[in-house]
Length: 497
Ligand code: ADP
Image (cartoon, rainbow, N blue to C red; front, side, top):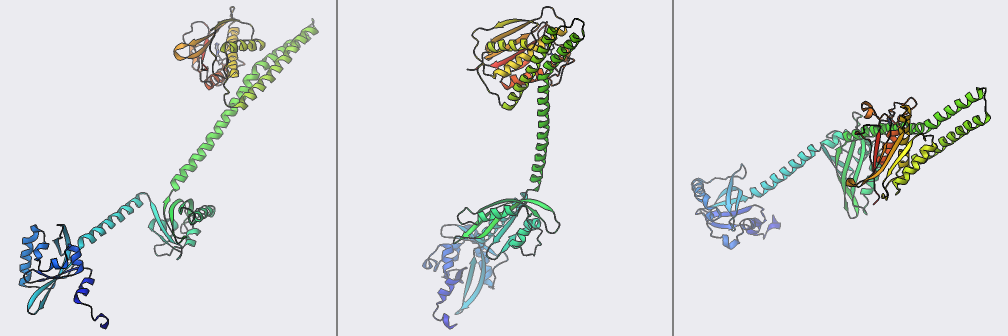
């Protein structure tokens, strides 16, 4: 105690953190400490002689007076706690709820009461606020199924919350170390964590940790996908702590895997479709020359078997055969070039010229038994399209027109080709009208389907390829439903502005 000699009573009082007021029997303040002066915002000399009622809000004064009288009638020591609170008034009229204890003291036959006040309100508010925010955090964590980890590098101790411990198969009392943490990571994913960790602890970086990896629960062997986002804290340029949140993303990963498998299957299907379409396109291109070659060969054979065998006639027939096979080769060549190109190369051809080219090709392919009636619009602006695509479409439509007229033995085999401007839509339109029997209404809706054909040697790809080509060039191809005689096919193309 010697070391305290010289310390005044007031100094000791001021060292107490609770506010202390000493009042006499008449309710006047005789002594206060620094905590009380701070709490009420009164100076020491202002407190002296002040009536204690001054520190009570007016609406509580009557009640307080009553309590004081009862207490002074039989004073006893009343400890703090058990919610014995009192509302007091500070200098700036702020009401504070305080916890009080009362101690009666007698000195020189006079009664004094030592009042100790503890600011319950502020502490309680802080406690309640902390509890609320902790509860909110807990609720958010629960809702998002989040786990929390806090790793102090120096002591190699990892604090894991309940959810984290469940994921890592770690008992509630078990101490978690970095080694144990790493052991649960799937061997194939270990490098993912390690790379992210090394990046995060680099003092030159931003300390952010982000990694997705699989964790194998050492207790039941189950495998889960986990994503951890965290922040490394540095002290004196050294990483010393990682705080992170972990989320179980197993469901999402499973869905992704399923989606991937589904995509792979769709890709296979798509490739099959492309293969089928390519094979069909090749067959479509070869069908006509092969049919012609077969027909010419039969003629040649019959000519050689006949009595009036003429070398010239056989030569002519065989020359036609050679021509057809050269055609077939050329067609294949064009087709391969077309398929290899992939994207649509747009040019600015004149539709009238493309129509003339297509007529020439059709004729040279053996489709010359018809009278073309041309209704071309003079000075038609150029269209924005691939010349070869339009040419192929026109040749297909001309071939179909001739084939239908041939099959029906039509005498006036005229094919009218009209090229005009659709002013209202700012498009060019081409129509091909034949003098054949037309398309039966019952089958009209199927004729653009791949492999739909009514011809004995047909493949059913001409119209579906033609429509695809026109659409690839920004136009449309359709069968005119209002045509009474013959079949009329229309297609549109945008002008090159
Ligand atoms: P393919 O010519 O190999 O049959 P397309 O796709 O070119 O294949 O034609 C499909 C079907 O549409 C034809 O089989 C035919 O029934 C019908 N068709 C096409 N053009 C005409 C036409 N101008 N007149 C009548 N029917 C036609």
